[in-house]
Length: 170
Figure 1 (cartoon, one colour):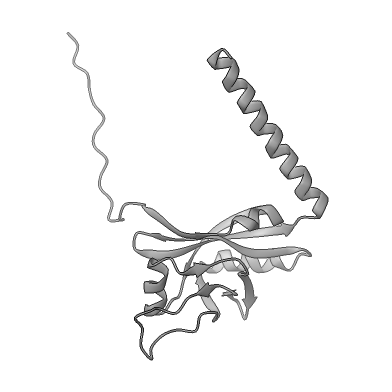
Figure 2 (cartoon, one colour):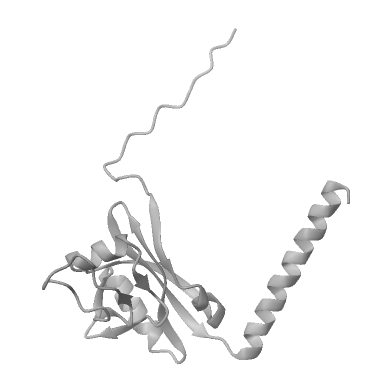
């Protein structure tokens, strides 16, 4: 009998498990825009903002990011005031700084100067206890493009249904 060798166990990393607890998503963004590139950014928050986020009191509907003095700021993000906060409560719609590497910021500055490109948050989540934003570089869609995308999605869905029925023998 030949002995089988098993691969050595992976060395454990100091990084916590990658658990993503999604707090909010911007579903309308994928409909209104064509996503060109996606970045993960940290977000600078105050204490009561974090507590309100953990409770799920946030809206990404009107949020967008701007580049100001070499920094990226998230504007229009609505985080409801914390119910049990005191005079230290935060402003619901204040501008919040996004935390990215300098090379990523430089790349985004160059791309946003192109005509028609915008930075839009797709989702807000907690990863390893830290609040992160999934930021997308997008181009706006015209009305007919939205209709084409919906038609393609419906056609793909119908094709999957037909394949599923064939497999089941219907």
